Image (tube, rainbow, N blue to C red; front, side, top):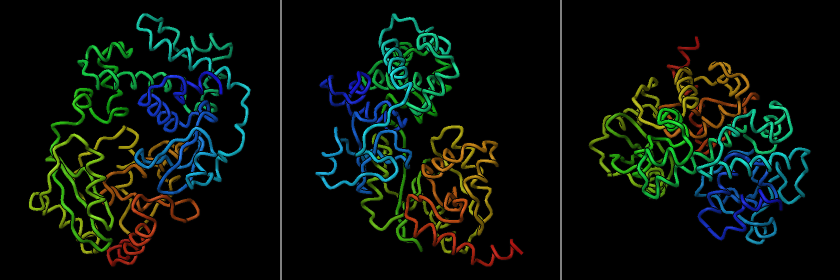
Length: 378
């Protein structure tokens, strides 16, 4: 295990919070540098993977970390067929260069007196001995992100740590290396999901009302703020649905209030029953600019029809971002209102749906058979 792998795995720190945060960051960024340092297992699938596995990113609550494949297998997990985590880590000719630059970035950001001019792509390339283009390609291949994205991720991680410790926003942003508040607030919605001040409070002050009702697809949880719908979950177990909502908003003021949501719930249930094909409800969700573009495009897909991930990527002007489109569909918190179930693979087969492929299939078939859909296609 190299020095960067040790740091990512947290093997020498003795700080379990830092260790888990570092491992989760490596999984989120599909960091190849972390391959060999640990594996992660997903409870819901029973599978364990390398940090760089290209499979759909799991929910944090479903993930368990192990230092070696043997430990994961002793607890009943089986190796992923895509990334083959039980096999030796394949060597990359520039892995050592990327690891060295990663260490430089981490050291520069940890040292408030450090020279951050060396964190530009040109500065990092000069340190690595590679051209800027070659370094960026090597970073994408080995770490799964660009050098700038790696810098931003560590800046944001430092910011989160300072905010959680109680620093005021101004102190925290400069300590994390953001040169101005405008730079931070430009990136906050994408990387924090909310403003820094709200994050510092852990989401406290948000008022969310929810209720659970019967629907043709089982129980449906609808949650909303005064501005619009924030979550629509489908399932069979009410306690589990409520638990997921509280996990999403741990410090918000959440209350069950059917009367407050009665009109919106009625419209959603009518839509699922086929009696109201056109559903146009306001939403109040945190999202990146890219996610919003994808979700807006999904709302344009006509009732009773489908689009492929490739078609959606082309429609938003990002034809090569097919995987990113798929991730945006998978992270959509307001299913039904934003109809991610209407997106399928190129071959017509169904792909990941948070509420189960059987529900996705039922939604597509039910909509296609609806008289309103047949009339629109005629």
